Length: 395
Image (cartoon, rainbow, N blue to C red):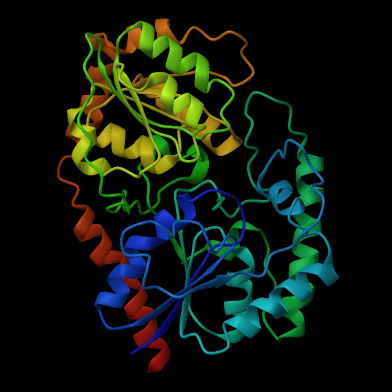
């Protein structure tokens, strides 16, 4: 059977591995040899099914970011060295070495892996929620619609990336890219829904929805309390964590919060009350249906899972992609967002509003619209796309 590399190059946290994991497990179940090349080889190691998949560090560019607030995907690539021809060449060469024995690549935010696969003549697929797969326009569309984005600046940035990338492609006898988005044409597997796609200008696209997410196994009992049941998944470095938990405690909201690396003092402070802070990953598919609402950072997977369960969201973004997803959900009317720059946010008020019927009705409408979506069927379709590409290559 085939050797398939699952790759992650850019970004942080475990969500990239969580996205790749179901497809990796499915391909292994079908008899293929799978392995991970990850920006952080430790990420997602505690997820179910991860323990027996080989993993190694992916080649990545290490250097200072050029744009503190990138305006489009081209400027994001600048922050990872893609405007430097020598750096791109070395990065792609490193990926080529690691993919020498691979028959296919399945990636989540790994443009260098796609470029290396292109030079090696092996198929590659990008499993994405859309943020890192811009449409093939010149320049790539601006991300911050609320800020000025001079076309000349965006186009110059995209052309710098293309010049660096095309120099390496040309050295390997491959045709140049006309736009950054062209890199993903024909290989993007969009695991999202039109309502959550942060590129409304994408036009007609094939959306697969979300697959079953890798998850933990814990199913803790809900604590006692008189308020709504709140399921939460937040990072320990979120600056509003303690004020949020204090507000939930005052409301006696029955809260189960996954917060990896939470300080023991914070865990102990709420022990025995209506708020439980846990380090152990929970079985989201079993706990979420019991909740009244979800508090999270507006990561795509968690947001989609909440909406598919008909649960309104309190969204607390910590980075741009989450911020853009938050805006989509707010426009949908299925949640409220808190800008991280807002001082003294009134979390209690937000929870109170979400407990009303208006937000829940919008979330439930989303759930009804996609009630027929079968994650297992979507996963089978994704695996079938990869196997069809492998068969074409073999032929």
